[in-house]
Image (tube, rainbow over all chains, first blue to last red; front, top):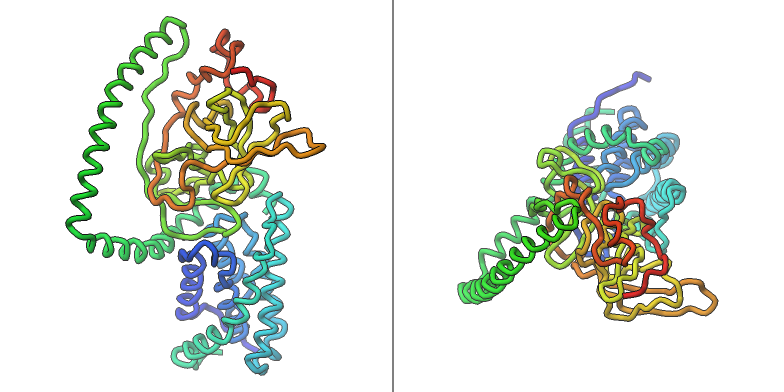
Length: 163
Length: 283
């Protein structure tokens, strides 16, 4: 298999949009339940273009998210790299699942992501002590169909020629 | 991650990355600001006139007070000169806006639109008209991140305005609630007591209002009181805050009315005093 490289511009654009959505101000009570936009978008693109979107992309995007959120540098980056690695491993299976089954996988991946991000926070002494920390698992899974159909349209319109 | 937590070397990397992400923050902030501006332009003329009148009277009152304040400042300087202590220099204050972006929902942080190019430095006090807000955590080229006093990792040495009791105010993660820690059971603290910065930590100048005590409990079998306080500044609602430049005057800060010992040795460096709970509760 020849390895296609380079990140197509729609992918970069959607990643940027996901980063922006991560910091858009929303009401205080909803803030902990904010879906993990960046993780969702990365899961989709890693599934669609496993040769182009890899662990490095996920790591760099995660570093940007860390600086945007004012969190420990590398916390989101490592968690995103790990879940992208898992997606890369299972992408042939993930692609043929129906959407509701993909939602279950996404929920599991986001739960793993939150768990990996929780670990450094616990070590440095300020773990979030509320059960609401886990609410993005549910909201992200519920938003997966939206992300899936939206990004699939993007891919079909501009990126059909790519593998 | 360990490096970022332990040493400050990565501050540079973080700063560089943050300069890259700053346009994104501005892009997110811009529509929010535009919407508020549109709403502002629709306020009626009567509202503006009323507001203008209120502001005028308030301004007149404040200016009258300022006159007395200046006289007191002069008198204070003269007395300090007599006592041979360091002079309190003029403080530099600048207003700065918050960027309308959200950060980690479980930490209490805000983004300010002034950075290293405006001489902002890490550890700088952030206040507003009502009281202390927090301190600058990290700076970038044109923006900076501040930690609110309600963050669980923030502790602020305070003293009670009524009794002079010293203590430590720690955040709880809830912007409406602070805790005063390590106050012995026999101390005199009552709901309604005003807590001021004591200046002992070396970061904040003395005598800025911080919080008001809301409840005091004496839990059975515990060595310390359980004191809750409410911050005077609306931490989660203010859109504009003030940055204080205090670096050059901190050497001259000596807490004034803490207790007799301090007053006899006013030159003692403030930072060496333990900002804790020693029984100094005599007014």
